[in-house]
Amino acid sequence: MAVLRALLRHTSGQIGVVVIAVFAVAAVLGLLGLTPHDPLAQDRLARLQGPGATYWMGTDLFGRDILSRLMVGIGQSFAVALLSVGLAAGAGTVLGLTAAWFGKLWDGAVMRAMDVLLAFPAILLALLIVAILGPGLVTSVVAIAIVYTPIFTRVVRGPALSLKTRSFVDAARTFGSSRRYILIRHLLTNLVAPLTVQITLALAWALLTEAALSFLGLGTQPPSPSLGLMLSDSRNLMETAPWMLIFPALVIMLSVLGFNLLGDALRDVFDPRTRRALA
Amino acid sequence: MSYVLRRLLMFPVVMLGVSVFVFVAIRLVPGDAITAMLGTESGLLTPAQRESLTAYFGLDQNWAVQYWRWLTGLLQGDLGLSVTYGQPVSRIIIDRFPLTLELALLSMVIALMIGLPAGVFAATRVERPSDLIVRVFAMIGQSTPNFVLALLAIYILSVVFGILPTMGRFVPLTEDPLGNLAQMILPAIALGTAFAAAVTRISRAAMLDILGEDYVRTARSKGFSQRYVIWRHALPNALIPVITLSGVEFGYLLGGAVIVEQIFALPGLGRVVLDAILQRDYALVQGVVLFIAFNFLLVNLLVDLAYAALDPRIRYGAS
Image 1 (tube, rainbow over the protein chains, first blue to last red):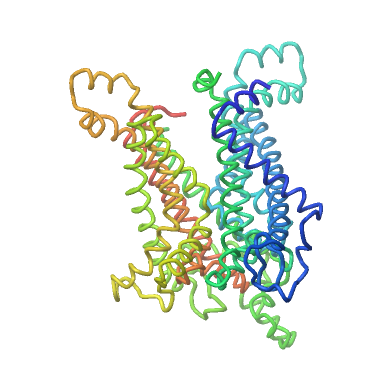
Image 2 (image 1 turned 45 degrees about the vertical axis):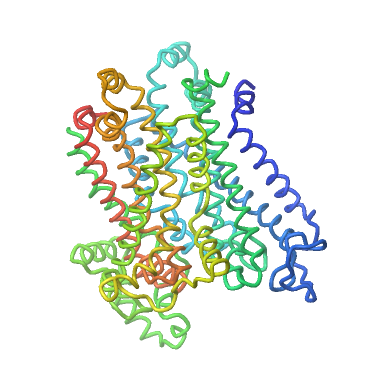
């Protein structure tokens, strides 16, 4: 609660929360099918129409409503981002905690495996995984999750290593607390701050990667709308129908910006050095 | 063990892990390699032909033998043959890599030329309107994916200003330096902007940390000018995190320019990887991915070594 209050006093936190809230509403409406028009319906008489009363953000080459397609696209992007970051955070936390706790061979094996994954530029690793699994929405989730797992593992392992040697952990052990209890109750609760910040920033990155994969034709497959595909469609039509470029571009920029702002604000809020200034 | 030695020993270990990962990953691709290699034409093969091809590529051996052959080939510079190009993979890399390298360097120059002064400027005017403006721009820059920026840049230049970016045949640097630069500048800006934003943020934060240090206050109290204190005392120390960031980003750019190369029709390595993946040219995917990972690791190694050289605390304080 204290965190939330501090967050809402933080300027970039406020902007971030508002931006994300707006897109989250659009995403939910899009996923529920509550869009102004059918995102797949083709109005052949209204092809490449500019923004207006019927089609607020204009139509594309097939006369499909851009706004409705954007809403569904945001829904899919958010779903992919949440799922993939959730998976990565889960896997990374388990790997990082156990690596720190058991140490020795397990730690070495886990961390070297993570080093190998980190040796690939992120988008390239994602592309490689898509090449193996074939393009599609599920693949995007898996690919982004795998790319982000090593980062969560590192974020968790470092602080977990130092927490492990603290006296309250020794005390818990003396009391006979089970390993699972210590790991969850004592270590994990103390890792909430770095994890929250990392999750928020990872969401920004995941949105971006999902858009990049679908832009390249390796994510969501047409005719399903997605932000990346819509941008890709706009490439040859930007002179006649700039709205096809500008609206999806703005949506991607603003949603990534929202998560980046929130991540920054959370970092400030959790940092004891800056928290005092905010209180 | 010293940091530098440990770091050097780690390089071949991780690289070996990377080679195993790539090897296994490619073999997890559904379908057999012969069909993947020949596409629809594989349907015309007689069983005998298929068998001899399998033997020719060593695919009748178990994975361990295949891996060993591949690895020993790699160490001799043999990355295999690309089916789509009909050329050795190493040849394709040699042809395409200079463009990617040039693009990465150009982006880095742009990023540092904008980001470093902006970060220092903002740090010296902290919490004033000019600092705020720099920070807002940095935040927006960091949140704009390079392909979105690339498309917007093309739109603004071509539609608003009527200048058509040259996207026809690619002109190599050696052939026509100016023509080459004209083609490369837009992609470099698209790639360099997010990088510049990151440099701005990190150099601002580093400068702020250092400007609060005792030795900076001492220098100021000795009556040195603000400019002298910043240039002589603060900036050199603030550069350390900037160098780390630049190294990592540079490594990414060497392999991460996939989409921008695609948008601007630049025949670099990123495009080769993408085409290879789309065409299922696995020898090429394998070779190029390995090459990119190698570069990435190498750049990171060099950065870490530079970091150790700049900061004695890292050299001696083993963690």
